[in-house]
Image 1 (cartoon, rainbow, N blue to C red):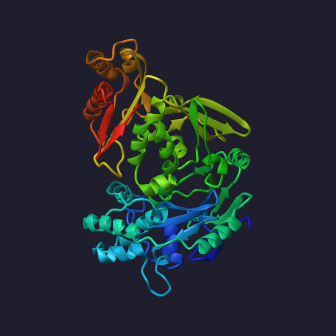
Image 2: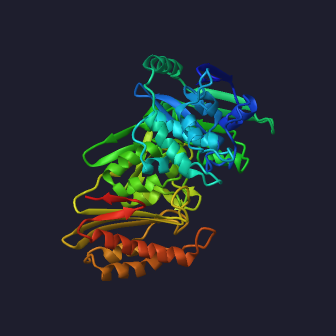
Length: 492
């Protein structure tokens, strides 16, 4: 079974021998199974028309999550359940409560995006919990409707949650047992021919850290695949041929989180959805930042480690993590090394990661007494957008004096970068408007931003400076709160 991908679809076991490692789930559904309910819109994980739901066993319970099929590689389904819009209709023709709610509220207009909305709402339905407006806004942020039909769809989501039927525990138990039986205890290895070039393509999915380390050393030029929210576009948009892919998503140790008295350790394979809840517990602003990280579908697939490892100068995670003093642990073979996160980024497209080395985990210090933390994302849209500027401020203020300052920005340089001149201008000074204005001026020594389609250089510099002043205003208020969107964040 080394070269066989196994997963469940509508209760049926699918076994695919050596499929193309970079074939997408969307392509498989539409062109191999003729399940055309799942649509192709953007082919880059933005529009949500291709949304499907993945079910897997986590801590002996089923977990369902909406993901984008257009950038999800087929072999990553191994050991999981795939649910599409066709899966929901009962054998007697009865619609699922989510589907019926959309019918009742006239939530489908042109209909192209409707299957994606159904699947996003279905994932929320399976997850349970309250159907608040805020939760529905987050749930549907990754599904675009050009007909502007969101009002009925939000209403449908509320009605569907109210119409939830009791869980069939026997059927659920059978499904869990079936998926546990599919659990792999050895590396999945696939070998296939590229249909265009005729070249050989390999795919590995190790299940242990040691096996992953061995493979990355054996294939130092391999593409390391985590959530695929970046790598998927290499195939769908750039048409790259990936000859060797090493998938990290089956390594349980990479998905672990550990807490100590002073820090939180997050495995590089922890999804953004899982990591944001943990980090948000200690840093409310960071949790809010991750809520604006793409969409639910992308957060369910993408990993915190992957957002760091790819070295993007506009990744949302690095500025916030740098500002709180996070460290990065890399592994090569049996050896590990730890570095301050800011040192990982050398220059555009270049990171301090040797051939055969991979990101293992991130160590995030917990807040200390007298620490203030703020982070802000500036983009053209509130949801589903890339940062023009992302700033983060970690400040330790004792008796009105700045004892320590860590300021980091994305979008201001070729890498995520600290504002060392601005920090120096603040440390040892009173936390006053005058000191902040001096640090704002010093920031011109830290960055020389560029103009591009998202923002001009002048705009970026002015925004970065103003965000420092914003942090000052917020951290000098007696209530120490701030309003973000339609919700107020309370800080310690």
